[in-house]
Amino acid sequence: MTRPMLAALFLLPFLGAPWISPHDPLTQYRDHAGSPPGCGDPCFLLGSDEFGRDVLSRLLHGGRLSLIAGLTASLVALTLGGLLGGLAGYFGNWLDSLLSPPMDLLFALPWLYLLLAARAALPLSLPSATALLVLMSLIGLAGAAAPFRLCRHVVRSARQSGPVSAAAGLGASDWYLLRAHLWPAALPALGTQALSLFPAFVLAEVSLSFLGLGAGDPAVSWGSILASLRQYPVLTSQWWMFSPALALALLLALLPAPRLGWKEIP
Image (cartoon, rainbow, N blue to C red; front, side, top):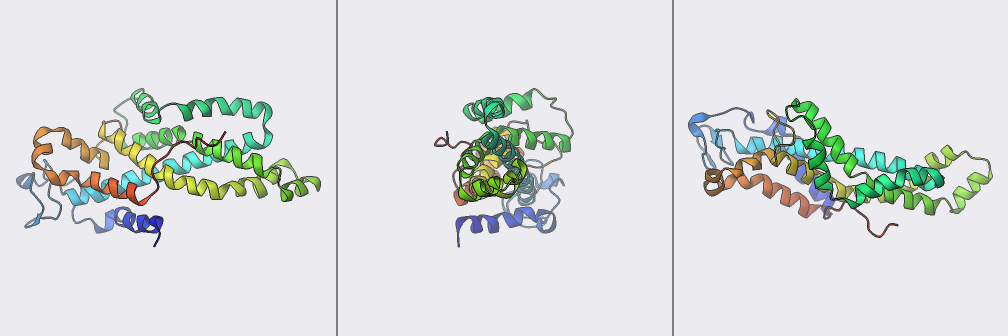
């Protein structure tokens, strides 16, 4: 069984969180705050946090949000970068000169700092749904440079291939060549790149939520769960609160190492 298949099996419980979590992730059992893992009454298989909320339920629901955010940001980055990269690679000239500099800038700058600066410039009191949408859009935009460069490189090379030259000789339009030949030629490479972009974007969402710049309450994220570890009593006595970090480490181990750049592509 391949690593992507193992990763898919690993992700299924998180995506099914609303149906399999034992408790509501927001319900507080004040009399059982900070309880270690055990199955009493109520049953906390991974313990409870400092407010008495079930850690397993929060882990599942938080993973669902983080994974959906990473997947959505990946789709934004691949769609935006692939479309613009294909246009720049095919038409070249002024269009390539217009699109490449901002993408090169995004590619060169540290992506996490870009996200921090962009998110910090927005109001912190955004509703949860709006904050999550803004967060996914920012992450996708910051990561679009790598698919752009990859797709531009593939389209430039495929444009000189026999089938494309033959179709152009028969009078095929530019948009037909892009739609029928060139963008499909880039899909396998973009699919491979998606496997490294996805965990990078999940890590980005977790990082921003940990710093309080992600989706706010009542949304649950791996980052917001880990944020409780900034409290010294939780850090030193509630070891089960590290469970989101373990889940994230397993995800990163099952998928290719996160990379937001392809240095070998000119």
